[in-house]
Length: 429
Image 1: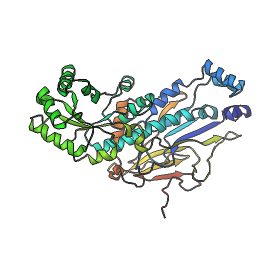
Image 2: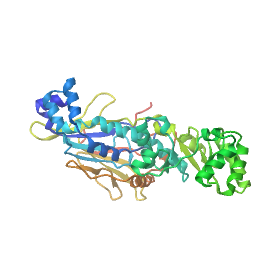
Image 3: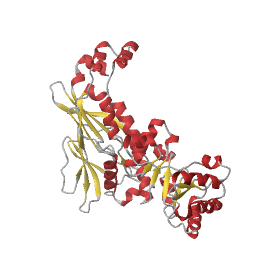
Image 4: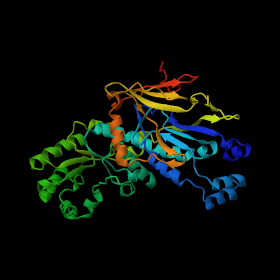
């Protein structure tokens, strides 16, 4: 595309690309944006060095003129978008890229791969932390995904409310809190369970978390308190009927005087199991596989589409594809979250070609991320998490439901739009 557009002169036409999802995964009431800061980092590094250009030339992927253009590539346009931690709905213009066609079209794959992955993890993580209530969630999914995806997943989970990660590389890169527990192999290494507990406590102190279900659970709890006294930080359950076992362990700990010892549960948890554990004597959750795979939906289905471009006489015109089931709406979008006087979200209002009118209680969603090629929109993980928890609280309570249903709020369009809303819920009749 780039080579052809450079040759015919259209590569330099002003263009607007938008990244959005046509629909939410089945059963989801909202989605969560994550990966924006990673995207900005990737954009900053997005270059075609000598070795890369040589590869393209030698393989005949593109011609010499295109290679020369790529060698000097620097994004010089503007990007606005939803911040890390923001909520999105069908049709939300999560990212708006304004530049020449040539500069913007090259970014499609990198932008989609980052946001589709990170937002899928964050969307699952948000449901988990919502149902966990005030109980902390620990990200523990590194062994269930690609090693670099594990680092990105840890950050996405933190943005959506997870308290800590067991991935130390994520802690090093992003400064997010880390935590972890011993594995069954550590207990099995020692001649007795008592020896393992003594070794761990001697090394890490009484505030550590002891894994208690390698052998007999009742004996393990008894041994743990004999070793630490009543100052043991936590115990971890990793198998069995977790609600029942947590109650049993809580009773035993309390009877032994360890009333402040917390109970952490793991074992292939997801948001449904966390919800089921809400009444149980549980103080925290370690979540792995379901988290880093988006709890059944490893992508958000984001697409990156040209919605406006300059015509031959320099006028910006809306463009859109009309393919069945993949209809899009032409024209540059603006977005705000319509809220009532109590601050509860009522609709995702998207203006086509012009910004929708704020009725006084609304919140503008698109933030400047890049201006004339300069990155201006970075946020810290702490800021992103705080933002997510704040905007999630705006949603109606129905948004927390795990059963199938429509998005928590509708997507409404204003402005010059010549087609029906293609993202409206489909009739089941």
